Length: 215
Length: 215
Image 1 (cartoon, rainbow over the protein chains, first blue to last red):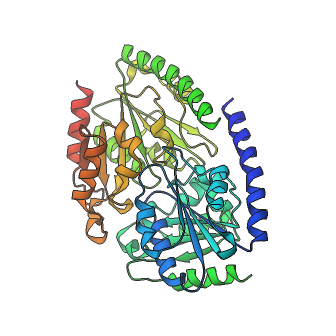
Image 2 (cartoon, rainbow over the protein chains, first blue to last red; image 1 turned 90 degrees about the vertical axis):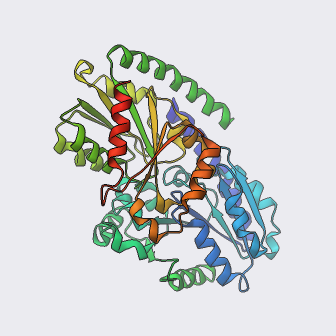
Image 3 (cartoon, rainbow over the protein chains, first blue to last red; image 1 turned 30 degrees about the horizontal axis):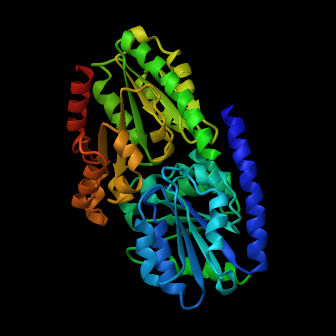
């Protein structure tokens, strides 16, 4: 009975996703869905990305949060369009909410929409919300065994950002184990190692974004 | 419509929870539900707890995982009863699965059952599975803003373990901010700071467990 419910939600979600994708394609807007556990670095990635790219591209953000407007507040200083979806405890952003958020933007003026999903490695991976790609973020402090243990996100994502690489030396994270595990789940995924502390690897992310936006 | 579905699941879950709690009380078995994001330290906490307490108490473990049996394999060496529930992508352990798992144990011989829930700060907090207490685990690398942003778990938990305290100096985690945030969500929650690297704080956890089991 629970599975039936899940499927019905998934189907409904899929339908909206196709409509959203069609609309964004018409308007020439790309959409990236950032998915990770809480505290893996989604908001900081957005801060760094907006700092670097806001003069080059027109960017909007859809912020998903279970409670509070803290992440949206952190992004206010970039003076870009932001819609906050407060899920009130809900574990993912459904496509119906994404559609409403998109309707708040003037799509003619936009190049890219970033979705910062609810902090959760499990549920958001199940839902297509009309994005062009999902980007998974995992920090080394979360452990090298995560692709195998939470395979759906790593299977669905086009890119995985391995974050907090500056903390590698203080953890038992084994990069070989991680990449072997990842490859078994998704042999085509692009991976980028990043540290926000020393800005290591950020250029690789910006380069990937440039390629993605211009192809 | 989605909200209605959620409530129906919650109600069904609640009913089983009461039955489970009644059964465990009759058999004088306590049950602790460990909830955290992936990689916050649930399995390592169990390893340390089993090492320390397995000669003093009769312990069983219910392992919840989206995929793989890796966590259950890590606990095999303690030679205790373990039931693995593979949710196949599901984001929490429902009480109906907990009931099935409990039926696999000989309750007459048990003092305590630990549930290691699916790694997820959101969904498992919604579900009462008949446990006596939920224990939340958060590592400092996840950020000091989490109690306010993911309030349900911190509201439902009797104890919060603040883990990876050895990494504090390498992060921007502010303990005052964390405890202020936590207090607003749950003024009665017990907090214990822990590091598995230098074993800091583990005795406080074992003392809390002793008190809990004997009262």
